[in-house]
Length: 180
Image (cartoon, rainbow, N blue to C red; front, side, top):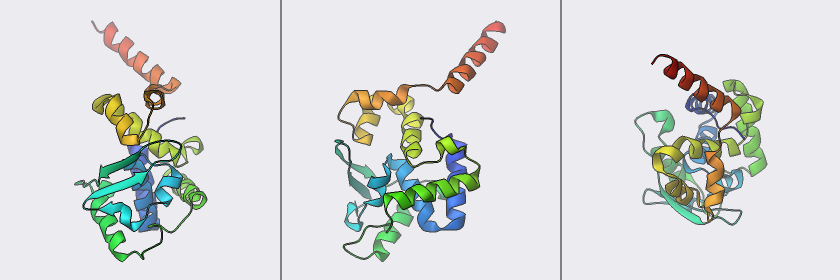
């Protein structure tokens, strides 16, 4: 599986927000917290409290409690939008009011609009993207904890490099070496 680049994430978020605020926020929350489709669509209003999001991860992963992300870039600022949505929500319902299959279609629709390749146009690419983006700077153990993985081997899968990325890195290394 390939991760979305930061530019692709930005384009996806822009396309979603232009269509519907809910779509944008679902995609942003899935990306920022590394959530599976079923996890993001299962969020209830009581999961958002005091500036934190608590999610019981699926597939044998741990429950995580993560800080809501505030960002100077409004496209990546989930905190205010999520708190506002919780304030407007009805008790006993899920926060976004859609199922995982509908979320898949939402991601696919906005990915098409954003010009994202079809093989990256699915919700799990968002989890993969945040893991790939942060694993080297935050460290594998922090990403393991953040994603709720019990096994380091599950997180280690995000250390894999695509053929394209490997080719680009080698070409850059060879260019740098030949200048010496």
